[in-house]
Length: 372
Image (cartoon, rainbow, N blue to C red; front, side, top):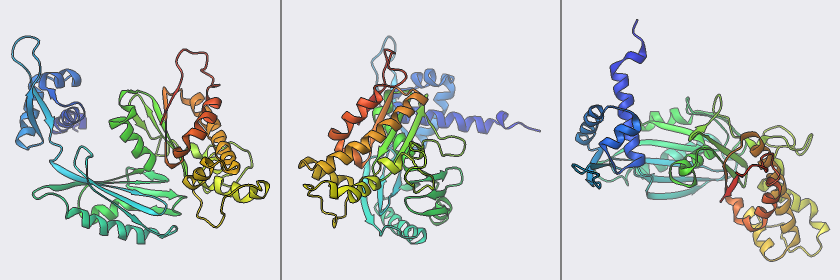
């Protein structure tokens, strides 16, 4: 019986993937530096690079400074070798982006749909718009893959949305549907995980080993990076801090539990609080006939409306205690706050900072940073 680990073709494929990723993430880079960084023999790297050059996946882009002897030739990944389509499924919008392999956007479009629309209808809209974007791919280039970011619990291996409370969808085979239609690899993940990878590869997280992204808005979610790798848990569910219970037997959450952080710090909580308490604020100018959102509430807050200011501060208070628990549990170097709610950062950040500064590790010289 042959062990898979001894399969030469498998090892070759692994080494090839490592070299491609090293050039993609750290190029322009020399063959020698690739060899050192990956602990691969220089001859192995040279053979792989030659193959990649023949396939037009990498190309030479000049020479590096010499420390003696011949100047090393620098290699760069061909980011226009093919194109990908990224899709984010929001509560009432589809966001599409056609990009090259460097995530440079070629074309973007936003397609609205009515909140509560069933998955079949929305996926038909997804297929229709992918077909339109494919026509924008430059001549002689290919669609290499499709990525889908969606809220909720996702089985990445099966390409399946198990459950999204925000969308009220269950057991949707997004991956199989799109792969069968377009015959390219399709990757499905939780939307905050996808955003966290973007921070790790291109944003604040590039220089960090351990950090957490927390999104604050219509929901509360997080992505966790440990030792420069996205931590997804046993089956992809790690990071659901919005569903940690802060208040025993508290407000009902869309997940079915009571007292979740999301039930006390999300947009729905803010709107509900305003409706329940506006009679106590006789001078409030908030118009309950409007379609209220965090952005709209913040507009009122900027005008000095105390109900708007108080509810944003209260939401920030609950979020702060949630983040305090996360810091005590995971001891990250940085928490990156994102999402539509951060439009009100001038109001919410002082509240959050005042709470999280009293974490268990406050006596240590290192403290957890907050990035926006």
